Amino acid sequence: MSGWEEQTSSAVRPYVITGGRAGAKGEVLPWESLVTASEVPPPPTLQPEYRRILRHCQGMLSVAEVSAHLGQPPSVVQVLLADLVEWGLALVRPPAAPTARNDVVLLRKVLDGLESRL
Image 1 (tube, rainbow, N blue to C red):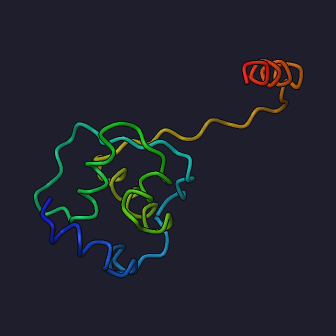
Image 2: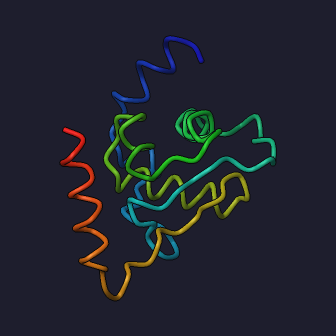
């Protein structure tokens, strides 16, 4: 990535980056969804923000982490990620569903064990 690309992408207004879109076409990706780049090579005409996302997503990152790396609001990153998923350039793993009931006894044992090590 050139220094110019790095400097300008954070200075560009979010509505320019998303093409004026405020939301994704489909479902909004939760911030804790895990994203990774697919094996599909990106086209050479892909705009710099998409390329930066794909570079950061070589491993699994959450939507919030991608947002922090790019220095863009999560809502902007959600739109860009939705595009990448639609184009087959990124894969998303939804967040784990919350459990219906927490095992308070187990949580207490874990807490007690951690406190005993301090």
